[in-house]
Amino acid sequence: MHSAVQRANALVTIAAILLAALCTAASFLDSFNSPSVQAHVEVVKINRFKRQLDGNDEVKMTLNISMNLESIFTWNTKQVFVFLAAEYETEKNSLNQVSLWDHIVQEKERASFRVKVPTKYPLIDQGSNLRGKKIGLVLHWHVMPKSGRMIRDKMPLSYLSLPNSYTTKS
Amino acid sequence: MGFLGDSIESIRSLQIRQVLTQIVSLGMIVTSALIIWKGLMCVTGSESPVVVVLSGSMEPGFKRGDILFLHMSNDPIRTGEIVVFNVDGREIPIVHRVIKLHERQETGEVDILTKGDNNFGDDRLLYAQGQLWLQQHHIMGRAVGYLPYVGWVTIIMTEKPIVKYLLIGALGLLVITSKD
Image (cartoon, rainbow over all chains, first blue to last red; front, side, top):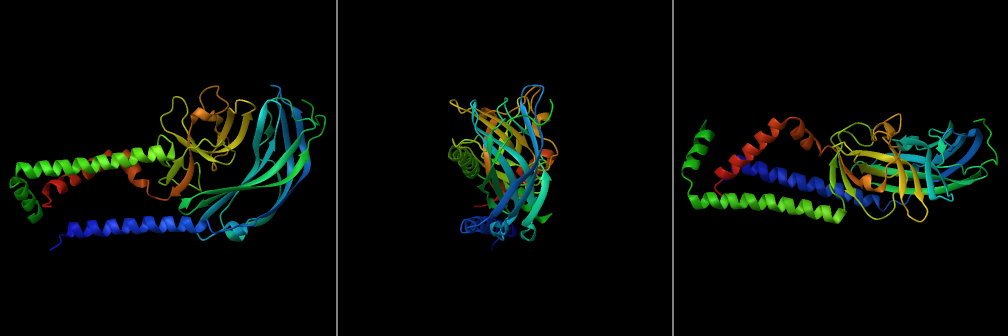
């Protein structure tokens, strides 16, 4: 009546369609999640503030960061990539957005924490504009799902005013 | 043995008209696949709307064999986005995250630095000789969605081409010998 090949074909097609529908539904349900993130950052110390040999300003600091990302996690969440960005404007650039520190949270149980860390990536300006500059510290997070659409969001935390003169000799 | 005998029998008993019909239907399937692919290219605004993750540089988020859906809009690129870019002189596109961004006043041109989540250092080692930043025109698209494991089919077919030929051969045989 029906050959084995025909049956296998029907089975695989239906399985594939169902799987695709499940993945779409999982991702769609994610959009109903309205997370409320709490976070706080303070600059403990500016470890280095100097002008590099090529003329660009460089800043390294130690930060006290605390956050609670538990409300972001759904059952379709694989990991949350969170990073702290320094954002500021200069005469030459309308936006400078530099990541200072990032972290991957893979489980909801580990999503609430406090760390005291040195900046992972130095803040290097294109030019020498950082003396006395007011920088915005913004927490960004990127939700990576088990399948489906990725979601990005952010939350401005505080401002930092850099010193008016370099603290490290070039 | 019985199946092979039947297949040879059915090949012999085919008439020209039937063969032509089969060829046309095969052509229709191939062209509709092409139409869907090109349509996706238009909708997502990107040259390749789907890419397969080839390396482990973005683990644990993306593993080898996952596929990524790309989208390119005119929205400005921002730090934290996962972008796909081509380095001059390299064939294979790279999928990494933007960690630094400088956007010019007036022109809106951007200097971008990327890094793989699982890499220790940033991508300056991967860029062309002397290149410190990526520009807008290097970026092929942003990764907006993700499906695990589906890309293994493509990886196997690329790295072991014999599987590709076997698959196409088997499909061709099935199409010719089916009585529908």
